[in-house]
Amino acid sequence: MFASHAAKIEPCLEKIDELRGAVPWERKRSVAFFGGVPSGRQLRDRSGTLYGRARLYKYALDHPDLLDVSFAEIRDRDRYLKDLSPNKELRYIDLCSANDSKYMIAIDGYLSGWMRPQMILYSDSVPIIIESVGKPYHLESWIPWVHYVPVRQDQSDLLENIKWLQSHDAEAKKIALAGKALYQELYSFENILDDAVSIFKKYAQLQRYEPQSPGEYYRLTKSKFSANLGLGNRYDESLQKTKEEEKK
Image (cartoon, rainbow, N blue to C red; front, side, top):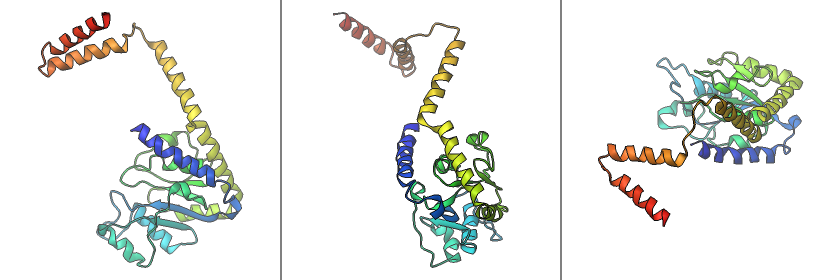
């Protein structure tokens, strides 16, 4: 699973690097961008109140000078979103290619955004992180208003915070650059490898037993499975035969 995600992340990082110099900070749009789909546990209640990505979409329709929200699709059950703006074009914009906005938004769908916040951190844009139901582990090392701009889960301070970024451009750029430096410190491949080596070395120092070779452990485990599956001694006999052939 990790390998499949990593295979998607690497091309994204390469795309961000490729476009990094194409649009300098001064030429980026002073709007907060989000691209995705209108997913989430609750997007609208019976009274018509919007939540999550649906509320974000409505804010963008009402305040195009502050937000740009692009949905790739709107499903039939969410047709009310299309009714809000029947003529708005549905378009998919890859996060990795969205390098023309100074601020980029990370917000939960059905699940957390997982790598979206980190990808924004790697770019030259300011991460705007809308509070999650559960605090993501990565935010333990992120400092609000230094590496990202926090927004309450109900988005009550979203517009205010975007306006602050627009009126404090130098500070906004500083946050974007600090985020990029933090990514290199926490998430670069080299540093992750260094951390992994350090952890395994410390773990090895705590061992109080003589470890078995993987091969022997594998044979013992397979033998137990064969007994549980009713294979009797057939697996053990096969092993013995293999050993005898290896000796010849």
